[in-house]
Amino acid sequence: MYTPRKLKAFRCMLFISIVLMLYGSTAFASGPYYNTFNRHVNSNGVGDWGNDTLYYHVNSSSTLYDAIITKAVNSWNATSTPIYYKKDLTDGLIEIYSVLNIPPAPDGSVELAETRFFHWLQVDPSSSNWFWTEIHTNQNSHGYPSLSTVNKQGTMAHEFGHSFGLAHLTSTQLSEVKSKGIQVIMLQIAQGRTTYLPQTDDCTGINSLYP
Image 1 (cartoon, rainbow, N blue to C red):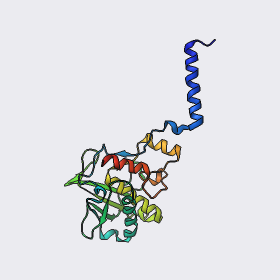
Image 2 (cartoon, helix red, strand yellow):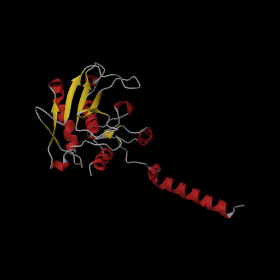
Image 3 (spheres, rainbow, N blue to C red):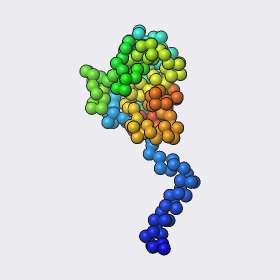
Image 4 (tube, helix red, strand yellow):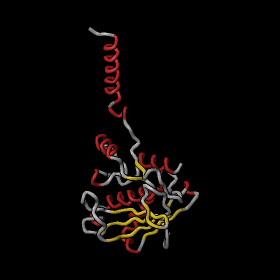
């Protein structure tokens, strides 16, 4: 026998079932899918929609990847965010180097590249804003050189994302994007990243940091 309480619970479950059938699980999606370093940022900003011209510099060790780096930067410049960076031949707020044998990741895997943050001295971006960054590509034979051209560009765009203030996804976010087949540039290749361009969620993250 249905009591008023049971009937109310039944109606609630029926409503949820109908919503799921009509709209699917995305009706309860918890995106956007981006993460930050506790909302710390580059104190110089990221370009203010072109009102400020900021610069990156390719060290002589990385000139082999100059064209790939340019494409990665331009992929961010083309987004609906304040990001605007140009190449400088001598100096920049983002310095790009190629180095040998970056230490392995915590899980023991080979690091393809890494970003280091500086506020005069090197800082933890989760604890402090920063003034400039260095992107290091790992020239180990299983590192950056082993990637396809598309994955080299995607990895460089990923590291630029770190320089701007985007962190890796949380474990919960990672689980959700995998289950939904969502792509963001801040995924790692080992996590299933196939895109080489910043996505909507990446841009949402940047715009939240630099309104």
